[in-house]
Length: 177
Image (cartoon, rainbow, N blue to C red; front, side, top):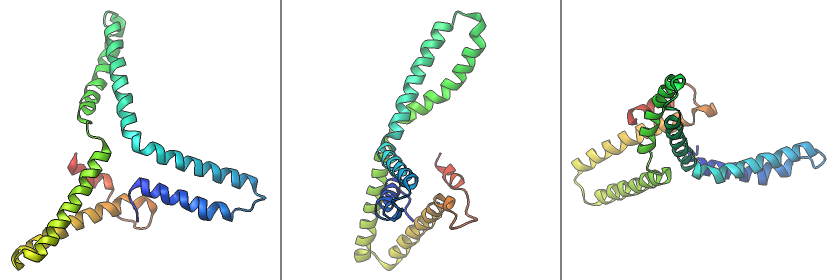
């Protein structure tokens, strides 16, 4: 089970190139054409995925700027006052989310990886130096983290259909919001 989209896409592209496309009957031109289309779309997704957050943030900034300009230009028109208020009602939360969205997801993931490594190093070092009582406490904390993360990992992959009955990943992530 691999959760990271970049790794999933790499695996899918490789499977298409190394297994699926070579297995297609050369006489089946439509199948060959469609498999090449799938391969091309996967490669495009692989390129686009890392910049999707920045792309969305860029669009949101331009939409907010345009909404400000339009509201200012239309402010004196009495027939548009209700629509301008409705626009402002959408702008306010969008502006707050835009201001809060300053960290790029790659930086966030870098922090995740860094903490995993640092926690692993601490646990390894504690295994050499800590008392049995402290090691028992460390073990409880690590097992709690592992249990919580594993549930989220499994729930994230639930749409694949391998493990029915898991809670929706969205409900598990709500506590972070």
